[in-house]
Image (tube, rainbow, N blue to C red; front, top):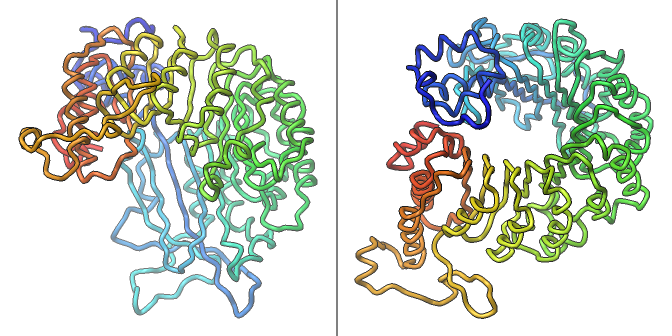
Length: 582
């Protein structure tokens, strides 16, 4: 196994692709995925080991029989022959490489909305896949349509479950059921437990209750009305380490506390000795009862909460106390905390976020003795840079400078003076992962990070504009556009300005020029993910490409940029080239 000190290519490892592929057969996945940074050939060989997965997404619809009641009479899948491969046609080699499986059942508002069965076996986001397009209906089998004669019943849920049953190498399973909108005629669909059973149970029987499966991670994102058959009988998974559960219900009259105590808690307690990570998704329900009753999990290392402890109008002091008590109980074992808030923030004005959606600071005042990773992903709209909220974060971080290796501040894009203050707060010789942003990206941001975070290996950075900054009165940083500075017509011609936005072009040119004189060969940064929020210019994609290339040329140790190998990225001369290799 390679040590962290040896991250540059070595002669005895820099083999041709065919040789690397042959050697890979003698390496386990854990060792193989660590070789991505050695050379381009090892990068190509190791990517499938790093990102193996399968995503089966099925769209389902319910026919109305002159009544709002839903009466399923059978299950069938319909395939469009001759267009995409059928799951039964997948080769054993492809099936054998699948490690992650996601089963998503989504409502098809229109009867002919197709689903997609996609098997992923290549790199991170853009996966080369064998695909099969299917549609499913919880009704009588479809009859051939004069307008669509190619559609015919081809496979039912049980048959597809048999295909899933052959994926014995998976260790990460996600089952998601998305139900129809409540304002439609289908609003009573969730009241019929047979509906859940006919959709999902064949797949659960093929996975959860299959002794041949070696699951380590399980995520169930479905209403709690389905727990009656999911956890009955309660499956025993020998090495379950990660569990994700959605706390939500399809019927208003469902007793959530009773469902939690009768089905969910026994399952968790049965696996308490092996459970390392817990992800609680509670977008609508108060999770106080769960945190009060779940008890002590001796192996717990990671806690992720989505939509928990954020809406003060809905959350009682008792709810906050229950979550705080749970965190206190595990303060010695927890090494990673993740806070998320999905969806609701888009419906609210940003000025209300700090008062109503910033979780109780009391959660952070708990000192976790071994905290390694802190992810604050619950305030995407905080990008406007509210100083008070940033001050709360800065008050918490100093106590973790000796332990924290990963800090993720998704959506935080403060001004430069606040960003520099935060960097001074988190300056650490051990921090390896950082996610943050800023309105501006001058060269000085990278130099300060290199000085204060010398061992940073992975950086996610969001910016709006690049270029130099000017220090004006008050000691705060302002952009050139604040000075109302304009180029002469001659300068516009030299810089190739074709539209009346010379400042944008000037600052872009300045950044590319400044990066040519910057060299950070000793900085440990290996992976860089850049995202621009300024998409007003017609050339923003090309400009973003040039910004990334300018940074790569100044930092030879960066291996990956936005998920691509540096050689591939530097070889792109246009956005079209970039899209072609993704």
